[in-house]
Amino acid sequence: MKYKPADKIQDLQYFGEYGGVNPSISDSSTYTFLSAKTMFDTFEGNAEGCYLYSRHSSPSNLYLGEALAAMEGTETANVAASGMGAITSTLLQLCQAGDHIVSSRTVYGGTYAFLKNFIPKFNIQTSFVDITNPEQVEAAITKDTKVLYCESVSNPLLEVANIEVLAKIAKKHKLSFVVDNTFSPLSISPKELGADVVVHSLTKFINGSSDTVGGVTCGTQDFINALRSVNDGANMLLGPTMDSMRAASVLKNLRTLHIRIKQHSKNAMLLAEKFQEDGLRTVYPGLKSHPGHETFKKMMNPDYGFGGLLTIDVGSLEKANELMELMQEKNLGYLAVSLGFYKTLFSAPGSSTSSEIPIDEQEKMGLSNGLIRFSIGLDNDIERTYKMMKSCMQEVGILK
Image (cartoon, rainbow, N blue to C red; front, side, top):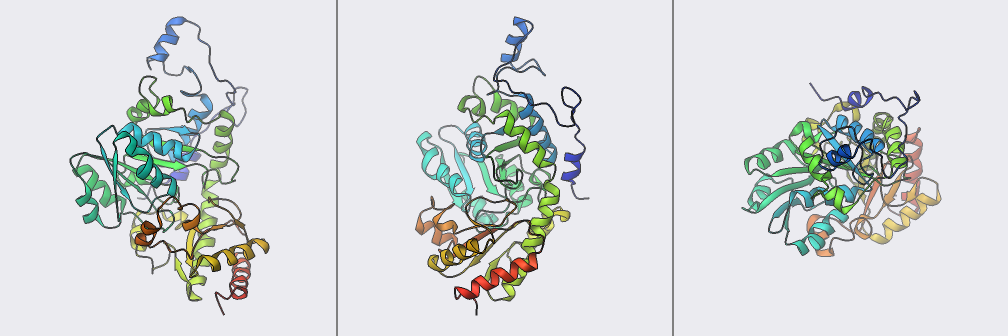
């Protein structure tokens, strides 16, 4: 029986301080104590239900974390001010000097830059591998490896990680298996498939309105407690704290995630099928032509489809830019990075969200400069959208 993540969110019910249907927002940076001993106990982590300081935790952040943990099926979760705040804190908590990470070669550009350029300053090295090749993954593991890291569906090439197989490899070698599930919330539940830690950029589908940035780490109570520790917790000491107002806003938007994901997926599926029929080089996990189609199908919670991301390759950056500028002019969406907005967003990732990856590495992983990544919106009449997009492609000479 497949996991039902939306049911887990719906089953949570909070009351505001005065009986409101939304929990009250804790608009405070610090919290008072009725006794000095309680303050001491809270610093020691032994006073459940008491709040110390909003960099540590706050009621609003804990409400959101609890809902996201319910969605992902983990014991608890800790929210952060950005997706990168969650990712970097998680990895720094799991690793120390001399450790090694095995990561997918196709990850978000910011994650790649952190692993390739930043974290080596602390003598933590990373091997980048084809995550769809289990033999290559296992061959990269050394005696110093502590973490196996991947994205459920990779940014921007939409490679699909076989999480169950990777989880077995991680368990065999006693590694912490961290999965970024930003591209596939609700559709895939990594914890149910064997992941130890699940991270998200809340900025994208989960918030869904492109008005804030945020992140979350979902895991065991022990691991989240470690992240929050006043003595050596990465989230506490590095300070990637989400504002309470923003946490409350994201929590409200989370309630409609299941409706939005279904529409994103439905629209992306139609466009992918049409683009492929038109002869465009189209990548979408819902297409049978996608190498990871069967893997995604086996892992997915079927109610939510194959997600809202697809790519097409138009041959050159010049053609990609010409098409995207025309589509924006025709009100078909925005030439913008990020994803999960109600309008379609499109960008050429080689020169934007993956620009941190060197050109030679982009070529090795198959990231061509003519690639356009689409985050498909919530259009009510997607057939109309397709016809308008096709007209734009014909106007710039991509289609006849």
